[in-house]
View 1 (tube, rainbow, N blue to C red):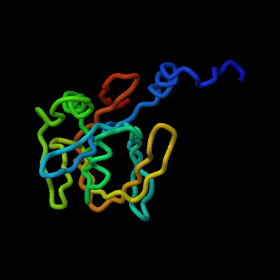
View 2: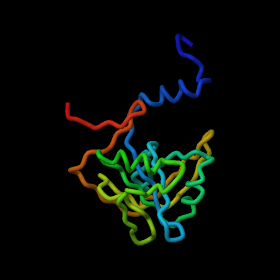
View 3: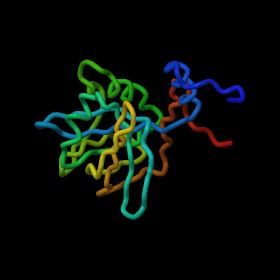
View 4: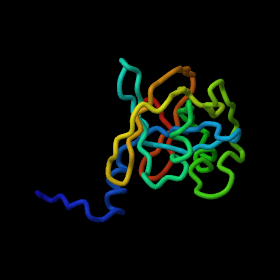
Length: 164
């Protein structure tokens, strides 16, 4: 295919995907009174009417299995300086909220303090997509801190924005 390789090597495909910079979000809620959450760099605004966003989640995710049934989910767009919180929320074992400042809002959505934007959402639909699920989330409430800068993930590293 004119110098392009078939996408058979997962490591190479991950490297190619890593060429596209993305913001990093936390998807969190209270489950049985305790915070449950995960980091997601596959957050995408989808629609203004109705207000929808999406996140892509591994089909095998134990965390999503717990979150998908929540009445509300908190989406926090992580800020520069949230690298440690992001790594903690992405950890497969242990207390994901250790050292992460957060608060619950009515409806049991959990928001990470110091983020640049927050959304309260509920699951609208799920679309199977290979080894992932695309979770479409209906936005119920929003708030933004326009003074903050988002955390950016690019080529497997955290980056910060700078004005050109």
